[in-house]
Length: 161
Image (cartoon, rainbow, N blue to C red; front, side, top):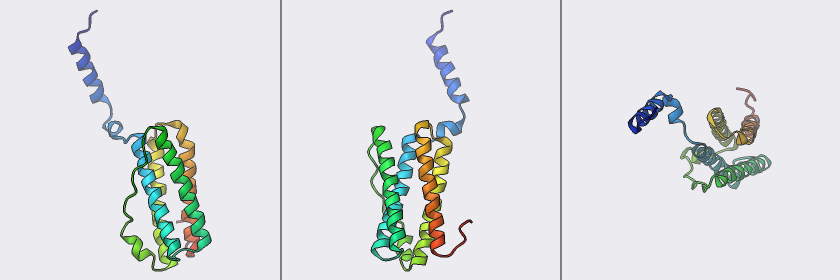
């Protein structure tokens, strides 16, 4: 049986239409790594600024900053392995200025950033295609959740929501 080019094109189009729209709309692994890296850079900048302004207890701030730098290093390596350079840092959110007014204000602010980052890792892990990175990304997510708990403890809030 001879298959004509027109029939092949029609069959390919039918397969493309049959593919769920959600799958087609999923960001690529690289896009997801870039998103996570941007969030980690935002946390790094927040901790650097808080340490410089004495808006976080120094030992806690230095520990969290060191963790963020390790997360950034790992994500940057993952992107480099895919032939991509790390995206440029973005401007800090305007809320950071008022969050630096006190250690308690900063801890509440940083808790929100960490919670947002944990949620982003959860989203990414649900759709990430490269199975080799699932464990490292899960480890970073776990550390980020621990940061959230440490910050909640720093202001005397319940450790669990």
